[in-house]
Amino acid sequence: MNDAEEDCPSQMSIRTTHKTVKFSHPVSIEGVGRVLPAGSYEVVTDEELIEGLSFPVYRRVSTMILAPTQSSVPSVEMLTIDPHDLAAAMKRDTLTVEGVSVPAKLN
Image 1: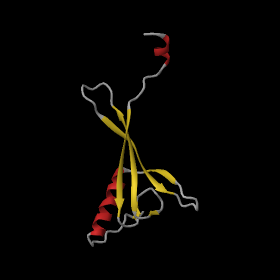
Image 2: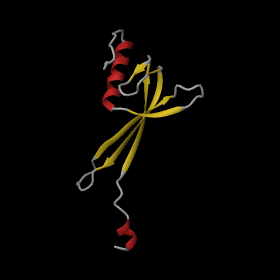
Image 3: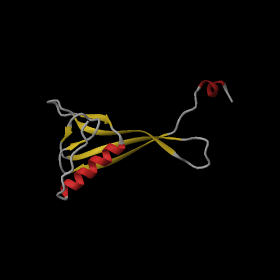
Image 4: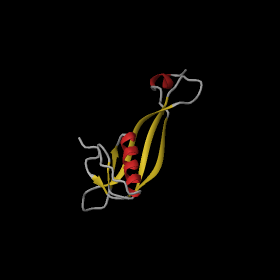
């Protein structure tokens, strides 16, 4: 092992996945703090490789959604969300499309 390798901490392997989710109605996602308009949103998930196993296993470290800002200038912000809250919002949207109204979880 050379000196350069000793000075560098071990690097974690991170993989990032992107998917698009579509909401047919305005949507409230826990932790976002506002209602987002209906539309398509990019969801970004970062996962890190758990090292030392005989097969690759990844652990989710963050999930974010790209959402329009509330400013007068069109721009997008990346908001950290819980994937379970995203799934719940998607389910509510699907049920609303089918004609069943499901209220968002209120604090």
